[in-house]
Length: 535
Image (tube, rainbow, N blue to C red; front, side, top):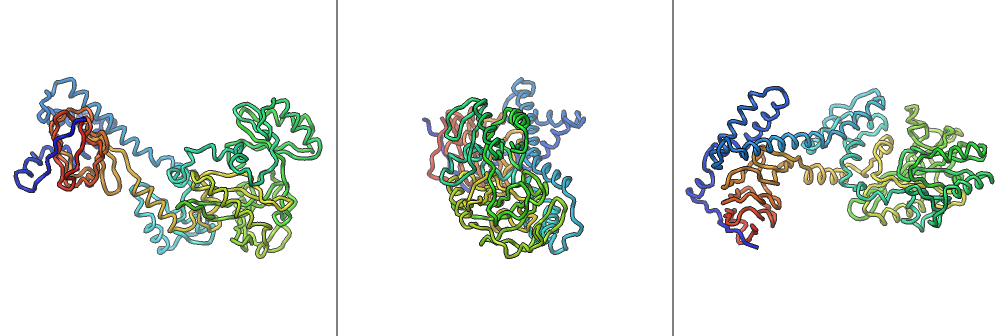
């Protein structure tokens, strides 16, 4: 591989005059490139003449700088390639948080805002907490207002589910590990933790018994109908759905024909069929059919999972699926397994202080809750790929800790209505936000000559796409210092010279690969005596 020729910048006036040739160059490469980008948008607003003037001006400048005539086809191709790059980058930047804001709007459309306002001091605390992240995400204080008023506990760091689920997946990472959250694979991942008895798995249209031996659909159906005929209920759950979606039951109080119809109407999704279990008496407080489960949220921030919050989903209506949004109570569980002194009834928008039998919540304790916590932490430690998990756990009639399912990403809304924090505390949330909304967050940008990434306080060069043979990397773009150069930033450009400004602190080892056979690279002195490759 051929090494590039390195020239270290000196501080003499002659060197400086060589680096900054003329003000025209700065108009293209500096902050004012933003103005050119904005004018490009006129292509889509009907101001064609203004756009045409911008293009003609740039064509004349580029022709003078590169030696390419303004009528050359390659100049026209370059201009329209850059227009496409600028527009595409702008659209990508707009789309980055659009799903997050859409989910936030959906939440407020679905949930009535409680009466009341945050105080001026509270609103200031909210704005102060979220201000450092405004480059990436514009927080709506109504999020903190809603959960503070519903829970009765103010916290400036209550977080929207949209931001948590649709952007911070970069933190909890489940989009890469769907296998870990598939209900059909829980027994493989956690064979040492009790789960309800499995009757069959349906995977990719094929049926398998609990031992993973393939069986026919007819065998699976007959096995189910036989079990139900002997007085036991079965639950069929989609393998990768949440919030109770798609769950159906086969019940002894239904006819064989009715149960057979339910079985046949499950569609073509992957399913798991299990025996319905009963709660331990300390976990059941009504005669409702539904299974009461503890929703336990864990986070793995620094390599060791922790329990961040826990609440019991308690059936008080005769619903087969116990879901707080459908009428179940949500009761915070203290670390020792005792209840808090109140439960939330989201369905009726009220707090309750009594169990269905009229007794107090406070002082009640869940049997074997310590065993449940031990099982959760053991399982969470086994799959560190999932950094945020919401576990549904219970204790059966025999006193065993039982896993029902796990939900990747954890949750925020069901936790925060209790005044609990999905990340444990605002300090722990701040660690995640600092990493993913400041240090790692960027917008893809483009101008006439550069593709680059815009961070909160700096720019990193991704690609040079100009026509000049002598290239001066700008010290600033969008008013921010250019501090880094990515790999292959000049590949295929056949350049004569590249001048790197003092603002650059990081250069990829392969930044100048393929930039030109005899290209000279002028570097700040701090990089001496490092050698970069060009071919």
